[in-house]
Length: 143
Image 1 (cartoon, rainbow, N blue to C red):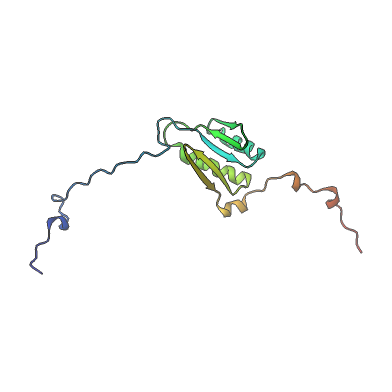
Image 2 (tube, one colour):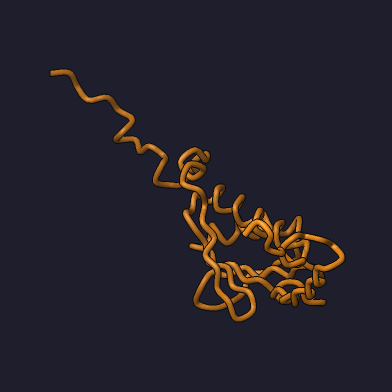
């Protein structure tokens, strides 16, 4: 077998290699000329207002009327907005102390989750249930 001839395509000679065909690029959903609106489903009225507050510095946004709490965001043309939107949703989830949110784009639905370690370390929002009542602020009598 020492005297066997090795085919040229196995040797790696650049002159004998066939050129690779170009791989067809699949167009991504968000790389279209004009981006479609993105809808983010919020948990309640407070979370909707908080999301709108987080979104408006970066994207045109509005609350969608209907049975669910939804904020519609209009991304700019091109594909550079995707990371900014995901970062926005992540910051909002942390601020609202929510574990996840449903994001709707085109015909698809995405579930964006907050990492568990970030959810536990985020500052807690104050609600009316967190305010101590007068009854709990008094100390019990000593026996």
